[in-house]
Length: 115
Image 1 (tube, one colour):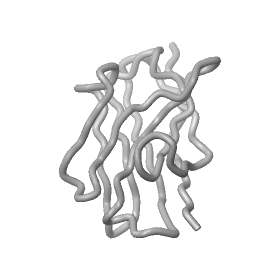
Image 2 (cartoon, one colour; image 1 turned 30 degrees about the vertical axis):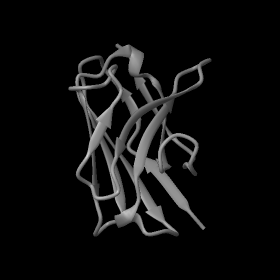
Image 3 (tube, helix red, strand yellow; image 1 turned 30 degrees about the horizontal axis):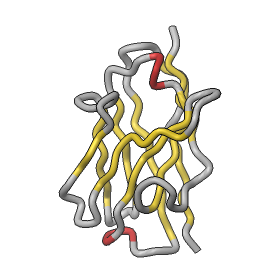
Image 4 (cartoon, helix red, strand yellow; image 1 turned 90 degrees about the horizontal axis):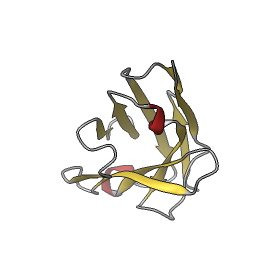
């Protein structure tokens, strides 16, 4: 059974940073494409970033490019999202996803960017 558990969210001021983590189990993490998606209040799911199954290729939504970095630690079966220069528009619940959009995802972690 695929299990994904996100953590690391919180309240941060504009311009601040957070690192989200996603602990994965129940599948072969080291050979899986993984993504982050987010859902802002009252809006639909928005794709944020994807890391290829070999851990080499990264893709980012234009809204986060240059500010967010996706990575993984295969020894820990953990996916990360380093978020810098946070803006109020980044406020959302963030989910890690096995695959791209539409795959199994965790329960999410809340990120609130506010002064």
